[in-house]
Image (tube, rainbow, N blue to C red):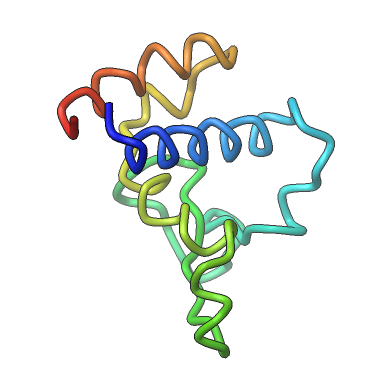
Length: 100
């Protein structure tokens, strides 16, 4: 697996830990969930999809909280619903083996 793929995988694992409460970082400090929007119904993806906001500064586009959104939202619901970090890693593993 390439270095870039390993970094993407590590970012997704960190988002999973934050979303599931394994890390003591409040979700709302980093992300805004689509399900918390009054006018937004989740019809595609999964219930933990993150709302992608347009950054005001070009520098902000490289922040962790911005760069992981597309990868996280593209995950299948089965991966996001994992109960443990190990289950999540196993479900995400095949996706990154395809990338190389």
